[in-house]
Image (cartoon, rainbow, N blue to C red; front, top):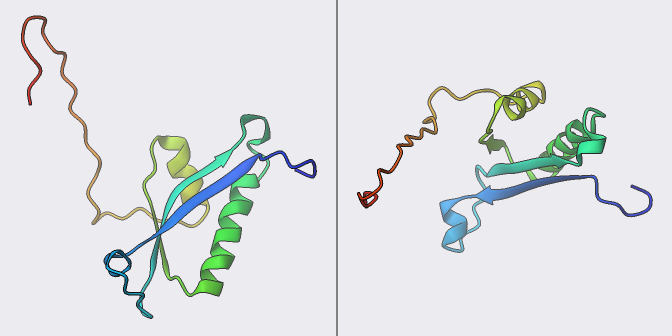
Length: 109
């Protein structure tokens, strides 16, 4: 906002095994979208979409060709789909098994 109040933020990082070993390849680069956050009072005003559009412009400038994201909940998924992301059927799904722990029995290790 003009007064300096932060109302939206996009978090992303570059993912590459080459980067972990200090090699900066000129070829394919991939970004991971960690979050698109908008303050509750400012949601549904197009701010998240503007953040993703700004990311897209920066990707073009930097020569990054791919962005991955993992969405939790229906709202996140539908937002990213509206921004042009596509579901990847070949990627594994996140799964969880939760079981109650009985009193007197230690939790499994």
